[in-house]
Length: 350
Image (cartoon, rainbow, N blue to C red; front, side):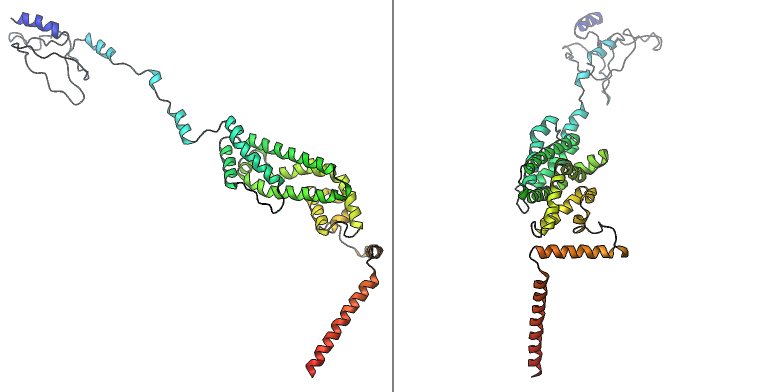
């Protein structure tokens, strides 16, 4: 009866049949289970058929432990169970480093910079370079500063600096050609307009690119953005026109009011800012608008200073400013003042 039960159960419980209980005549330590060693395996999904009716199944299995179910398997079946659990494949791992960086900040590629960010900066620079003093420029300084900040953070500082220098250089070359085509009577005035317009534009351009200046130009190039942009005007405009401009300035100086004093002062101070050594071309002209240009006066040269003053007076007389007219005018003003004062005092005493 037991053999028939084992044969019948062998078809349904292959690999999981329980050994028969040991005979009382043989000591427990001397007997060995027919299936080999008892192995404690982790819990796996196993479809077991229920007991057949009328057949005793022996003692119930031990209760499951917290970390799995103890099952009695043959030593040869342990390898098959281990093979059943699939090993993780390299493709199933997740690359967290690559995906995390994209979520932390939107990546700006060089194509994005050229197609989206630089066109905004290019348009704003155009408006700033061509504005007249006092004009309102309809641009968002916050938006432009944000573009510069993002490009610097995305390692596009070198490309942006190169594009800025190229942009301003092309503008200054056009300005230089326009000055060359100007007639002599308008040359000084147009140079003054070009100089003032460019210096005014720098007051807006330099602050907009301050982040690039701080973290790229000053750090890696050991220079300053404002100095670089002033140098561009010196090289592409002032140096090309200084030898045509200076004779006209000296001629205008000898003719009073041929050029307004404000225009003359702006040009002379601007040239001194661009290149101080240009003072040597006309020290007397520069000394009239910039202090401490000429050496200090010495006693031995007082006669020479007096001769220069007399020469200036003669030039004024030749241009209609006679000394007698000025003296009579001052004398008339004093006479009128004295007469009015006398009348007021006499009335007070009455």
